[in-house]
Structures are given as C-alpha cells and as structure tokens.
Amino acid sequence: MSLFGALQTGVAGLDAQSSALSVTSANIANVNTVGYKDSESQFETLLAGLAGGDNEASVKASASQNVIQQGLISSTNSATDLAISGNGFFVVSPSTDTSSAQSLLYTRAGNFTPDANGDLQNAAGLYLMGWPVNSTGSVPTDRNDLVPINVNDLSGTSEPTTTMSLQANLQASTTAVTGYSAGDMSLATSDPNYVAPDFQRTISVYDSQGGQQPLQVNYVKTGADSWSYEVNYQGDASNISTGNTPPNLLASGTITFNADGTLANVVPTGGTGTPVSGSIALSIPWDAASGLQSQPITLNMGTVGSSSGVTQYDSASTLVSSNVDGALFGSLTGVTIDQSGFVTANFSNGLSQKIYKIPLATFTNPDGLTETSGNAYQQSETSGTATVNEASQGGAGQVDSSSLETSTVDLATEFTNLITTQRAYQASAQIITTASTMLDDLLQQVH
Image (cartoon, rainbow, N blue to C red):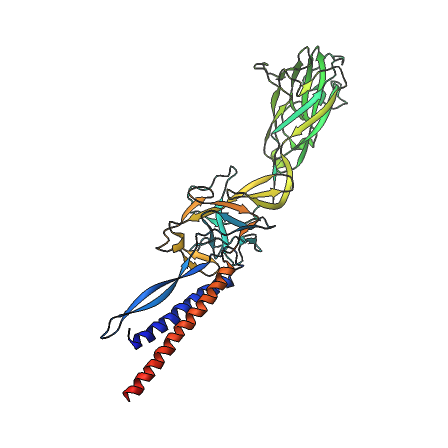
C-alpha cells in the first residue's frame, strides 16, 4: 500500500466511523420512541484502484435495519394504545381524506388517541386505517377498502325487544269464572262485559327507538287446570293500530296445566294447540304516526312439562321474575379492541357494537422497507408488496389493546458502540497523521 493509499484508507475509515456514529446516535435518541426498531452499522471492505498501483484496501459502512425484531410489550391505561405481538404493521395514512391519491404507510407505533373528530391518530400524526364492519362483524370483500378508524361514529344505540319470558305462579284454588270471551279483560272497567283478571302484571318492553312501552299480561281461570290470558297495550291507544276489539288487545288464548301443576300447553286464540308449546308470537302494530317499526315479540311462558315458567300450584298468584331483551337508548361510553382487531363501541345501556376491524400488513422482507419520518415505513422493491391480513391470520400477529411496543434499543450496547466507534475514529485519524508525517519525511529527503 502506498502512502497516498494509506491516506485514502484513513479518510474512508473516518467516513465509515462517522456513519456508524450517526446510526448509534439515532438509536440512542429513539430509546423511548414507541415501536422504534434499532439499526446496526455494517462494515465491508472496499477496494479502490490507484493509477499505476494495486487495488488499495479500504472500508465503507451502511446502516442495516432490524425491523422484524420484536420489542417488549408494556401495559398502559388507554384502550386505544395498541401493540402487535408477532408479524405485521398497522396501516396508517397521513390524511383522513380517502378520496385523494395518497400512499399508505406502515408502522409499529401504536400510541393512538382520538383527534378532535374522533379519528385515531398516533404521536406522529398518522391516522389508523381499518375496515368498517357490518352488524355481524364481516369485513368488506375488497380487503383494500380501508377507511380511517373513528371512535365517535356512533352517538348512541338502542335495541327493540324481541323476546319476553315470565316465571310466575297462578293459584290452583282460584274459582273459575263463567261467560268469559277473548278480550274481556282488556275492556274498560266501565264496560258491562269487562272481566276482572285473577292475576295481572305490567311489563315494560323497548321499542325500535329506545323508548319504554308498557304491556299488561292478564290471566283469569276459566276451568280446571285451564286459564285464559290476554296481552294488551297500556300506553296511548293512538300509538297502535290493531283493528282488534278492544283496540289495545295484542294477543289472547288459553294456557293449560298438568295435574302436577307444570305447564301443559299455551294455545293462542284461533290456534289448534298442535304442536304443544310454551310460547306465543305477538306483534305490536305501531301506528305510522308513531314513527316506530312494527314489533314482533315472542312471549315465553315456560317449557312444556316443566315448572321453569308459569305454573299452577295452590299458593298465592305471583310473578317470580320476568326477563325482557332489548335496551333503552344508551350513549357511547368508550371502545374496546380485542386481539382479533375488532373495535367495539360500548354504550351506557350495556349494549356493544362492533364498528371496525384493524388489519395488519405483512411483507416478504420487512427489513427491506424504506424508513420515513414518524417512525413509519414505505414499501419498496426490496420489501415486496404489502399483504393486508386480518390479525392472527396469514402469518400476521395479534393486536394487544392497552399496550405499547417499546423501542428495541439496548442502551448498554449502544454506549459500547459509542466507545468502539470513537476509538476506531481516532485510529483512522492516526493513520492520516502517520502517513502525513511519513510524506513530510520523504519530501525532506527529496529536497
């Protein structure tokens, strides 16, 4: 190696160690950056040919990403803090405007919080993208149909009643009435045909707009082990349009019992009683002016041959319990995110509704991604094309809510690299100093 070659080697060494210092400095600076993946300096020999001489051995340095390295998962108190256990990246966008042409980015930084509009945005200002789901949780057929995830999309929700169940006892020793006709218990008390029920209870159900509506269930004994029942509407009569007489009557029929007091059969008026059943179907025909949808309800009075519902024993008639599904209107109280990536809205009435699903993007070579500002990446020819998967499918990891992935930087290693780099830089500088001194000596000899 010539003296000039030594000078060039020293300069290359300084340049390589400067690059290594830059990589180490970036790692240390991002020791607390969520989802940050540390880089390593890779050194390789470089042969530079000089005029009239042999190739001179030198060095160059480049940064190598460790994108696939898994960081530690730490717990947080925010449901929208997200981490990925396993492979994959969150799909993010610098804007919520899905109509504009923009490239998607990919990140492991899951410190998302709602912005002023409710869109989930991480600390770098990147918006989390996901699939809108229907009531059954199904995602779009086109898996590239991504939209910004907004946790304020729903102000509230309600659920209409579709099923009501009764657990009650009708006193066996009650005296049977005569002359009863279907609908008599639902007449006005001033009507001469009115028949007072032996037992009645009013139970509230929920309509399609989240309001409470009172239904009254009436029973009168009409024979041995045989009772008649009626269900009528106790609200404003103008709310419904039944065409029945009386107009508030929704359903009527007969309920019979076995000799041991258990339920034998429930037969609606006009029914055949075959097959035997413990439930009836009724409908609340809401008037068009009410703005409510017609509401079918199944009234379950128990299981035939069982004492689990309505029974006939010789003790006071009483309602043991009633169960009505549906719910009043409830306001949004927050969201939860499960390991499959489903974003579920929770409401004050106890209901919940899946609104989005968070996808994960995987790559053939994640280490080939191009790093961008905001601790995010762009796909490149080296990384391959992004494959958008559901969490825990197609090689993608799972989504951990109330968690963040910490930086993969090891400070002890980086401080060691600092010392090593500093010494190597000093050594390269010494090469230049020594070669310069030798050249000076050579020039003095020549002159």
